[in-house]
Image (cartoon, rainbow, N blue to C red; front, side, top):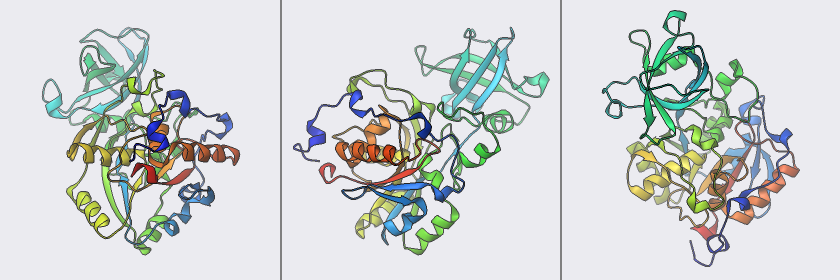
Length: 370
């Protein structure tokens, strides 16, 4: 990064990351085949329209693809209070035993939509409650403190059923707010990557949804290597910016982990002159959090905006993001503000499909943010 670069010298506001998006370009369903999505190649000065299955030919032998192997859980649950009032619970994360009040693995935190919030000790009947074949949740309080926006609950299901089991049995796929249909069997299969391994996300790492076995095999044949990280994507990824001043925004926290084998793979990649190719902004946030803190696991609330100095990622595969979002700021920081905004104008003009079920783009790190 140099102080003379346009992106780092300019003072940005949230409005700078706005763009006009016709509603019909918001994808409501995935492409018929994962790798049949379109791919906007933005690695050069001019955009090139491609199909996603062409990706292997755009990478080089010795490059390293890094995926986020988080698995989306059925975190949306419906139920009622003891009074009969209807409610919706979106579980944000399952607390680890050392994070829970009683040392168990049965506490969760999440977003609660209900007409009147329950009092501590109040019982919520989810999916019909224990008597109706579901389970109960006891409201404990706010999280992470009394002023927190999330709610802490203890799940009480049949013996031996932990929160992940209860969600798998009774929950719904937590589709993003801009997808207007209820979840179905297609969503259960397609709002999940083919290499999802570690349960815990409430939103998919959407850039990875385009990869299928054919593309993965072609990448391997081209000499492109693979590694993984885990970042459990939270619902905060869809939260709108509530302030016009970027520096006043409070970023949400997400849990991540990086295996030592991935650290070694990154070291080896750069040593041989290869490029680290992050699949998705969640992978970028994970790798750059590690580079910043040296911690291989923990919580991150890293907020990447123009002027950020990238230390790990060289190339990015990503979907198209919401106007005025933190992810628009991240990709602009990575590939250059003017370049990214021009690519978005091209994508709109050419009818690319946007957001989680939409198309993808390929970006190279701008020389101005080295």
